[in-house]
Image 1: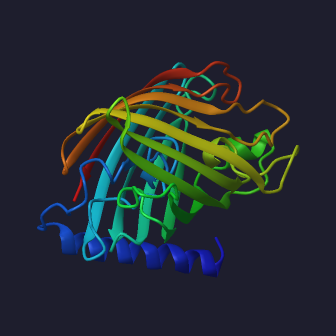
Image 2 (image 1 turned 120 degrees about the horizontal axis):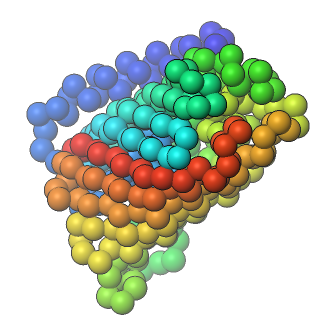
Length: 290
C-alpha cells in the first residue's frame, strides 16, 4: 500500500467511525422504507452483488444515515463472510468500510483469504424516488479500494497485484406502482476493474493485467412495501489462464420489517472459482440501518 492509499484508508475509516458515533442514538431517517437498499458484498449500499446509485441508510439531504451488515455465503466448496459499516451523508455522499473472509475449502484445506475494502460514492444527478415525472434515473459514481491480505495462493495462480481500485458508475430508478400496481426498481452499473474474483484472488494476471469495463444489473419488484424480490447479474473479467472466471448472479428476497433492520436471502450462482466448477449456494445477509 502506498502513502496515498494508506492516507485514504485512514481518512475514510476515521470519518465513518466519527459519523457512526453521531447517529447511534438518532431516529431512522425520513426516506421511504427500503430506499437505502441492502449492503452489497463489498460494503456499498445497493443489492447483494451490485452497487446502486442510492445512498446507504435513510438520511435525507438534511440528515446523516448509517448501516452495518454481516453477510454469509455458503456455496458448494467455499465459504465467505463479509462484514462492514457505511454512512450516508446528506443523501449525497456514502463512505464504507468492510472486510471479507474467504475460506478455501478443499482447494487449500484450513486456509482462508482476507480482503479489506474501502468505498466512496457520490450522487451526481437525479433522485430515484422523487423524480417520478421523468425517465431520468439517479446517477452516482463510486470507487472501491481493495487490499488483499493473503496473497500466497493468488500469487501462485498468477495474480500480479495485492491491491486495486474499482471504479463504477451506477444508475437507479424506482418506478412507483410501475409493475402490476407494485413498485419496481431497475439498476444498471458499469465497473472498471482488474480484480480476480472480486479481489479475493488478487488483481490482474498472466492473461490480462489491465482495467476492463464490466456490466452489472439489478431488477426488483416490491409485492409489498416491506418486501423486495429480484435478480442480479454481474459480469467479471477473466485474467488468469490457469482457471476460467465466470460471472455471478443471484435470485433474492429482501425483507424490511422496519427501517432499522433488513434480512436478505438469496440463491447465489458463482460459477467456477479456482479449481471448482459450478459453485452455487445460499446467501444470507442482515443489515442494521438508520
